[in-house]
Image (cartoon, rainbow, N blue to C red):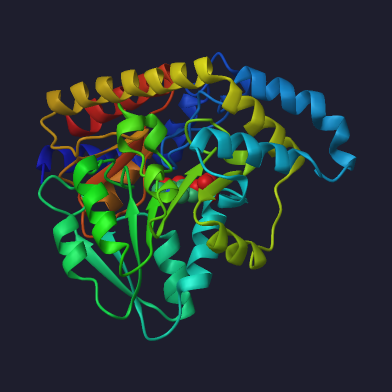
Length: 368
Ligand SMILES: Cc1ncc(COP(=O)(O)O)c(C=O)c1O
């Protein structure tokens, strides 16, 4: 605990919203669609302010007037493109309203009383929470010292009543990635007993996507599902498009339980963004530059951090997040919510260079 910090943050919190309003233009970027016109910069939800790709914005604009039509062909077309990219057949792809809908559909299918879902703790909660709502028991396995999934402990926790194992890679909120060879071996062993779900929402942000994706194991027929989203690297969170890659049988079963349907503009934006590989790669590099610069600031401030591979970082502020959050907000930055049991750690999303300038200054002021 940093007492100096606490004194500063207390003072800053008193200033509150008044100070925050001074940061009205902090989020403005060269891409008008991603600007945050009013208020503090929002670095709390792992959004990607570099997106959508200009080509995807143009596609949405060009199709806006067609919004009176149901998207009959666009979904099929997107599924075909995704299937080709993932190296599986189209009937192995399930589109969702964000990847969140895939997590929910999977949970609804496998969850129920008398069994348990195993995940890391902390990790992204949507699938586990949905299974718990169905009556499953949640088993949270503490992260290892590097704040990565402890695959050995997770494998050891599997029992005859385990309903599924959830792996989030990179993990949210820590941003850590698990060793790819170890994860592959884990899935090959565990998926013989229970279904494994690998959430790769942030994997396109990492340094080596190809080496780390587990989609090849779906192709090989293992009992594993991989999810991806257009919300992160593609910067299309507001359009709500994601997908799962799984066995054709499972996709058919989950499809039967889906209640939503993708929207036209989301579909055309996703389709266009997939083709715009240069833009997506440039976004990945911008996120990496922002991540590296943030780490330098954290080092300067003497804060421990988990090795980040997503579009966010998780660091040890040394101050209860319940106090650190308002202190940062008073400096014009909204950071992530509490992630127990790491209650004096903070998750912060990588924003635009302008947003990060505000964030660095806020960190230096609150923690320096
Ligand atoms: C790890 C992870 N998976 C899935 C999601 C769901 O995102 P979406 O429904 O926008 O695809 C999120 C959202 O932040 C996430 O962090």
